Length: 434
Image (cartoon, rainbow, N blue to C red; front, top):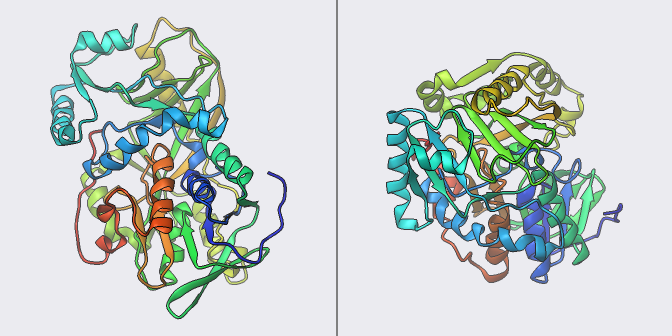
């Protein structure tokens, strides 16, 4: 996608070039709308390109299952539709329970997910060993969803954006949004770094920056980030096409034999001045899971402090934020992941690490995303807060937003994802089986 001129107007302007924004651009342009996508860096350079790559229904909050069940039917056809290699493998997803308490939580989820008929099943030890030969810690069993799969995060959003561009969408990389103009209670345009774009519809899919856009209209979106570290090894002999979480290790073997690994036991939280704004909203999650969180005071605190100083680039352009992520891989997480690999698969010669990265996960207090349209200004849509499991949902989120904009309503009920749940005192605990 070469540098493109900024059009004076468009039917829809999308803020954010992650998978939600790229999928929205694709489906809207395919539906005949004129689309401009604004990405301050490059497509998939932040959260969407740094995910594990699991494409799963399994383990989700039940309110997400109608969306994800629909999305699972999209992924197998997406490579053909886009004409791109997304490294899609439908090998299933498995969670292995190390004790009876874990198994009980998995069984509760199976019970809650049963009405959605996604085909998840309980496994015994022998079935776990069957799906992942050579595993030394099959625990007491697990759960498995056969039609879940995996795809490569670094390829998916760029492929969607490229196809949208081929259909006529304007994809502006290195061009962020500085503000939203309104007139008569409705969106009238977007101020970008390269000029004004007249439009009546905006989709804000700006990840962890979305709460700042929403606040401009007097709305409250509690949103914070955690930092995830992932590594990739050189190719090894085939182990399994199943993506798995087992004994604290997130595991997926790509088609070329390389392994994507992550330490799944704890979450890294970088302390910043901004984090205290919504601390009360997240306190129940911190209090109930304090052993799972590791807090760090470091470079990101200094960066955030600098961003609050008068005259700093961030202070002058508060909706833009920093261009490149300062999320650094945690060496402890890398050591833990490699130690777990050696412990769980001792027959494998320890492979060389060929890549490592960290990414921010923007989360809401209930770990469920916001997919909504603001009442004021009319025409302002939001897709954010996917809480570490948004990569897999990207295609269906783009599709339902396209339906909402072009047909007046989405084909799937999105009431559970409304923004107002954080403003009316509703309290939902994060639903998790991990």
